[in-house]
Image (cartoon, rainbow, N blue to C red; front, side, top):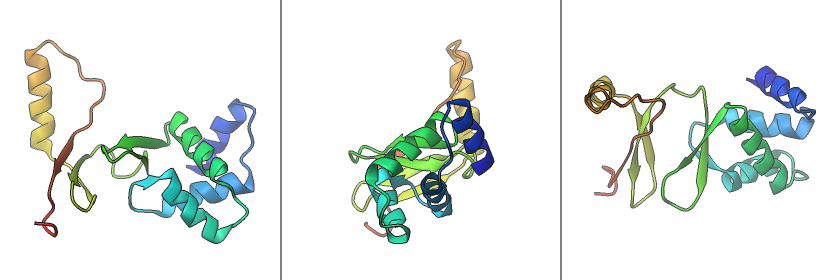
Length: 138
């Protein structure tokens, strides 16, 4: 992924700096959806000199390069996940604790396609976020 990001940056006249590399590596090491602030706090532990703006701009560049996806789970924060992570998937979001469970379900995918066909609609992309209360919070 770092090679693809570097190519993307070069095409825009930007460099893959040491700071950007650290942000990308830290981001890829995580298994959860991170806000820019959460990623900043993780990166700052490794390199206190890195500013929030560097982390935020790097996340935005990753999203522009289609190497990360920004998600809004109605908590007021954009959260990011690597584009390669798990392939297409949907989310269960707990309204109490904010936990996010990722899942895939072929039956849901088939049903979405069926509904789209019935309405003469061609799906180009979609997200499914289901909100409720997780097992631990019930």
